[in-house]
Structures are given as structure tokens and as C-alpha cells.
Amino acid sequence: MKKILIVEFWSHYKRPLLEKIMRLWYQLYIAATTYPKRLSEIIPKERFILTDTYNSVLLLADVSIFINSSNITFDWIGTFWEATVTQTADLAGALWLPNISWVGARRSSQNKLLMRIFCQRAHIKMPKFCSIHLDDPEFYQKVCSFWFPSVIKPLYWSSSQWVIMLNSEYDVITTIQKVKASTSLKTEEVFKNFSWQMLLEEYLPWRLISLDWLIYNWEVTFAGSVEFFMWKEPYFTQIWSIIPAQLSETDLKSAQEYVLTIIKALRFDNCWFHCELRISENGPLLIEIAARLPWGPLILWYEKAFGIDLIKGITDIWTNTRPSIHKTREHFSLHKCVFPKITNTVTLLWLTGTEWFSQNEYIWDYIQEKNIGDKIRTYPEIPDSVVYYALTHTNREEILSISSTLESKLTFLHD
Image (cartoon, rainbow, N blue to C red; front, top):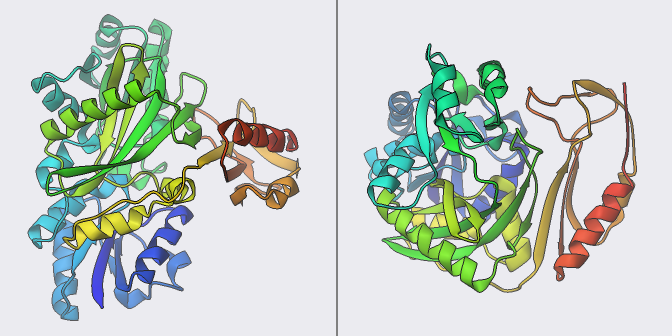
């Protein structure tokens, strides 16, 4: 049985992905910063490597020790976690296993400035951008002289929860406090190495979509598209999404051609990649491109919408096998988090209407993420959703109608 090492594990959404890998007759190992007890049923402790997955040197050292002491050889190595793409590429390269190269990994969304620089050098159209440090004594002057409206985000990391829009000089004054409050070690372990280096970009008020692909030995295969709908600005938390995005053939072709020029400039190969774009009547512009599978649940959403097995595609790449993608259906898949309308942290006192979700025939995933008595946060802290759900239907308008009807049944009461 082939042995697979997954670097870092995060959230309950990824457990089905690991179980799917195991059904492909692979023996699964995990390297992570903490032992995930919720995985103890499928991953025994003897197949777990405790290490610092955010440090390439320590990760390689601890994995090397494990290989030697256990007298085993890993057949392939991968990650589903944005924050460990670079470290996984380093590890796979050191062990001479198929994966994206260290060059491509470091030009991905793991270093958004380098991503922009190399696209710009290749004469690929980009939004206006510059780098800036939160503790720069001239931070206020530099941001005010850059552009309004603009967007500020950490130089690395993927989640849109830490992205803030700046509309005025007043926003600039309050930005430092907001960013520092939401990018601390208490928020996410990945920020323990964060040094307040930020990327400042021109704001693009257009539709947000992603195109998802795999690339193997420089041959690319298109999987599909997703359209995202965001939290009210100045924040950019993803509220809901739908597969596929509603694009004309012309817009889709234009976006695909644009993405192909990007991956050539960034030197992507042997990976899935997830490219987020803003689409206007004048064409697409890059937001960011990640050298990984799309966010955990999206993998399942693609399977529900198109019958595409993204896990099989990436395991083929990691095991040096030519992958193939076959659509078996053309459905729509909608996914949404429900956030209560609050202005500060509250306590959930009452929640009704959840039974309508479990009874609906088109719902295939439902999680009540908050219970009575739980605290519910909102910005400037990372906001909490109360309910998450996913449904699939053959008709786009019908799926939107079902979603609206179900949410109208929900009633929140808080202090």
C-alpha cells in the first residue's frame, strides 16, 4: 500500500477529503502542529508527525527523522492548506517527489507581491499595487497618496477575512488597529511569522469568480468556475458561492486565456491551481492564484455539480500519473454561510427554522455552527456564521429561490 503524507490538517471540512484518499487504497500520514483528535478514528498517533509545518527547515528535519526511525518511504506528499503550500513544495522537492516547484510555490498567493511582480514583468495586465509595512512611520501619507478606493491585505495568506477596503483618509487611520487585531497569533497560528508586511492594491468593483485547473507536465486541464458573493465592504468575507459562474462564452474564453499567461509567468506545474479574478466588460484582472486545490468544501461542491473527482486528479499528479477529468452531469451547486446582522459580539439566545434545512431534498450538507448560549462575533474580529448549508439543483433560478425560502424560515434572537 502506497504511503501518503499530508502536511497540515485544518477544519472538519477536510475530513471527507482524507477519507476519500484512504478509499483509493493509500495509507495516510499527517504532519501538523497539533494532533487533531477528531481524526483519531482514521489516523492513529503512530502515523502522525508533530512538527512546525510553517517552517520548512523544521518540517524537513522532523519528517526526515520520522522516515529514518520508522524505516518507511513516502510515495507522495501534498497539502490542502494554503499556508503550507510553500513548505510542502520544499519538502517534496527535497524528497524528489512530484509537486509544484519551490519557484512556482513562492510566486503563488503565498507571496502576493512576488506574484504581482512576475506577472507585471511578463507584461500581464495587473491592478495598481505596492507593498507597505503597517509600522512604516509614513504609512498614512503613503496610503493616502496611493489610490482611493484601495484594498489592503497581508502579503501572504489566502482568506478574504483579513482584507480591508480603504475609501478615505479616515479609513487609513483605523486600518492599522483593525489589521493587527485580526492577524495575530491568537487569530491563526499561521500569523506567528507575520511581520506586518502588507500589499496595497487598487480596488476593483467587479464580479468575483475563480477558475480551477490542474496542470501536469505543463499540460493544463480546466475543471470549472465558481462565482463568489462577499460581505459588505469594507470587508471581503465570502458569504456564498455558486458553481458554475454565470459567464458568457466570450468572457470565459477571455478569462481562461488570461490565466494561461499567468501560470506561464509564475512557472506553475504539477499541481491544482485556484485562480480568483475580477471580471468586467473590459476583461479579467487577477486577484490571486493559489497553487492548491480550491478551499475544502469546494472539492465536494464540484463533485455534486459536475461529478468531477478533484481528489483523484491531485493524487494522480502526486503519484506521477497523467490525470483526467470527466464531467458526468451539468448541475448547479450553491453554498452559503448565514451571518446574523449584528454590530458587536453577542450571545445566541434562540434559533428556530433549522428543521427546514434537514427536510429539504436538495440540501446535501448542513451544519449548525452555533448553538444556544454560544458567542457570535463580527468585525473587527473574524465573524461567525450560525448556519452553513449546500444544495444542488439542475436549474440556477430554482436553486436561488430554494435558498431564499429556506433562509426566510430562520429566526435569530440574541442579547
